Length: 301
Image 1 (spheres, helix red, strand yellow):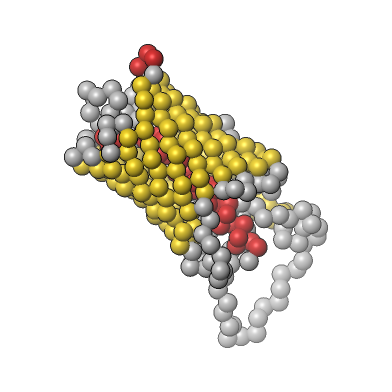
Image 2 (cartoon, one colour):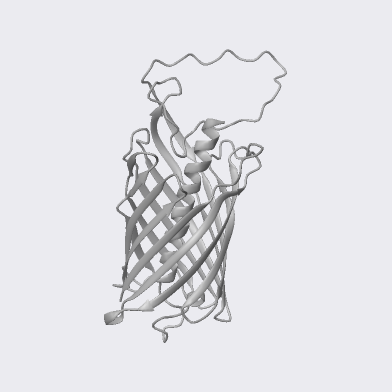
């Protein structure tokens, strides 16, 4: 179960960071009502005004590890925006660096009650054992109601390419998101095939890892500048073994913003989440993981 545990934990951290940055991006996006400079979160969206920019610093931890991720974005046109991060510094348990990310957002539909965007992100992994890039296309939909309620539904399909240390290599360690998929035990009707030949020490094997994330979040506006969000969805760490690698997260976020000088404003988002709140394959007696995060954003007009 070591591979399964490492896979679930790494996917939990990745999901938590992604959710924190995604919620922050939504907070400082273009308001649906142009007359409100500090529009409530329920009226917000994912796109930026031309020339509008943001800077975000997110910290995520679970008591055993700590991740720090700086990111930024800029609006190019009414329908097009860029965002990205400089990478993530992780202590798990030693200091490691995960490669930076660059992304593109394109608005397909942008109306006060409904928004639909297409997005894609590319990541270059710079840590040992994670040598290939990751491409993550996705779609993001927002439904708004009565300036008070907001429903976010999105779907992302990360695909990771590269070469990883083989299981027989002495350098092999649990690599986040790349552990061998677990297959349910099946009694073969015929004699079992011969095992694969043992690879020499230090050998690397090519891999393509398809995954899926479907975050869902429901938000309620508590006041003009304060909101609460309950999030869930599903996460499939390896689509080649979906039954064995599917988990269902659960999270809660409080968010608020305040005006700064020159038309800028700041956003603060503390949150707590269990990325594997429901895991059909969790070993008996093991509790769901708990991840906390704090996101601070500064938005420039």
